Amino acid sequence: MNKIYISGPITGKENGNAQAFKDMVLKVHSMGLGIPVSPRRHRIPPWLNLPDDKDEIWRVMMREAVIDLMICDSVIMLDGWEGSKGCVIELKLCRLLHIPVISERFEEIYNPGYDNGLNSMVVDFLRYNSDDDGEQDRSRTQSSLT
Image (cartoon, rainbow, N blue to C red; front, side, top):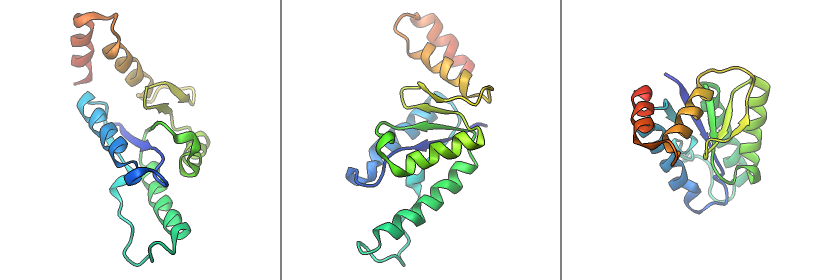
C-alpha cells in the first residue's frame, strides 16, 4: 500500500502544528489513500536540554523526519510549508529522488513525470470532492478507493 509522508511546518507553530498533522492523517485514512506517515509521531529525546538546545533539537528531529520520508512513495505538504526550513529540505530531497509531492488541497507541487499512484489519487480526490460531480460520481469514486 502507498505510504504518504505528511510534511508541514512544526517549529514556531502553536503546539507544533499538531492539529493540522492529525487532520491530514485522518483525511488520508478516511479516503483510503494509503498509510499516512507523520513526523509528529516522534518525541523529543529526553537527553536534549530544553530550551537550550533548540538547534540541536531541530537537527535530531529533522533526521528522524528524513528517515520517515525515505520510506514513503509520495508526500502531502501542509499549508505554510514554504516558510519552513525543514519542509523546503524535504521538497529538495523529493525532487532529487523523484518522489511526487502535492499540497494539502491536492494541487501538484512536484511531479517526477510518472504515475506511482499519486496522480490517480489526486484525480480521485478531486472527483470525490467536486460539487459538480453529483452523488453517482462520489459513490463510484469511493468504491474505487476501497
